[in-house]
Picture 1 (cartoon, one colour):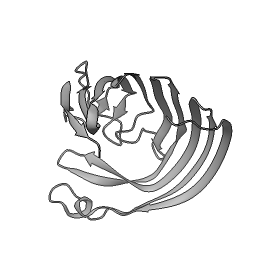
Picture 2: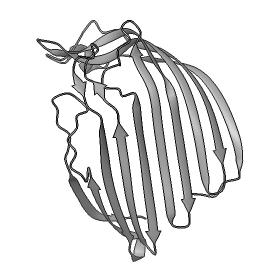
Picture 3: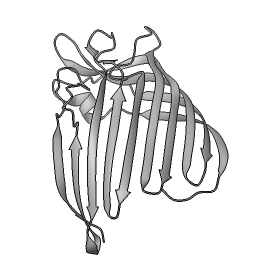
Picture 4: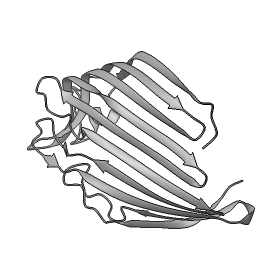
Length: 217
């Protein structure tokens, strides 16, 4: 992490957004909704960050109002995108980055309330709490890293009837720099072989190993 001058900074912003349904949302055979409306949103955000030469910490608060939010819903007969008339996504994101010698730390936490205004239910496939922390250590060309990613429970449908449990994943990495711009790397994702779902009834990858060589020009 590059060295930076110490100090605090704040910001605030307001914006609007517009999102049209995709061609597949409207016309894909068996999984579409030709009556789908475009999303419109109003977004308000305020941020505060403190920076020193060896670390930085920031907090962002946000409040987003969305009309005709597009979500994917599975009914008794078929699955198709639908509109949620009014939704509110509000919360706080906290971030930290630090580097001391060969040690680096990066962490973030998102505490949010993504709700359907009409029912108060959680929006589909969105968790109230999500966070991660990654730690790395370097020794003379060798770098080892570990990361934990965690999420609270979520639901797969607007009615909050299909429950998907929370999870915590552990990922491990190793890199070794070789002469001439070459690097050996290895990565173990989901090291504890945790079973979890991001979409109901669709499996995610178990423990997975990746290894190879990179060259940087």
